[in-house]
Length: 286
Image (cartoon, rainbow, N blue to C red; front, side, top):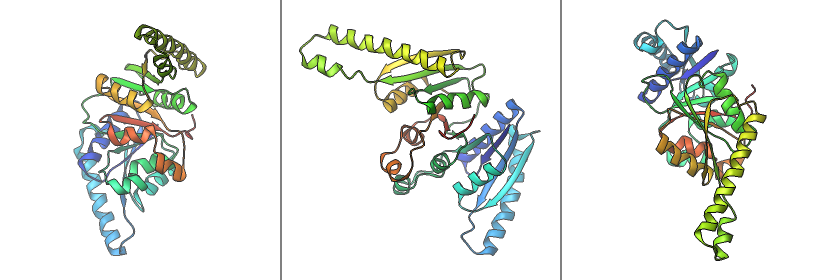
């Protein structure tokens, strides 16, 4: 396995480096530490920044406990951050990209997206965004599914990366009982409404079980939770209640202006949930 961790030497990326080291150690993987130098500046400054970055990477490798005795490769590359990270990941056939949560810039985020969102949007690698301090290996994982190939592929990617070993796994699906409003408007009582919602939940639960079996995921020792609510609201509420170490989520590969304007459940999660998130692009091959 080959893991690439991007760092800009900030506190946010320091957490990502530590988590990447912990994952590389548990998987006996190779680890690349990558720093990107902006090449849209005078050559003299680019060369100076590259030398300084090489020195800082060497210091980082010697100072961070999780990096000790690993096959760790420091790399300083030139270019735009998201493009350089993807190019380096492709050159080394990385299995996972690890990044820290990036500083939010409202207008830029709306129209362009943060670096990590752009890496996920345009790349084909699973990307782990690290929000929290690294105290131990992941012990609890929440994996929302919407019956799409993307959500099944996200769980498979996490399993292939060794993130599903000896953990507490919960698979979540949010559903909307569309007939609920009509029943209420017809003047039926709360008991009838509750019975209808309960029947819908049971039907969706059976569909979820079938979905997992058809995608060779039935062998996972997972708790299944089917809750009433739209996708992001269900995920957000469950993250608040469960406090998982990791959220595993797939993306649907929507692109262009439509995606910029409408966003996605994954991007909402990346921007607002205080949890480590493994985002798996739909185009990722397994």
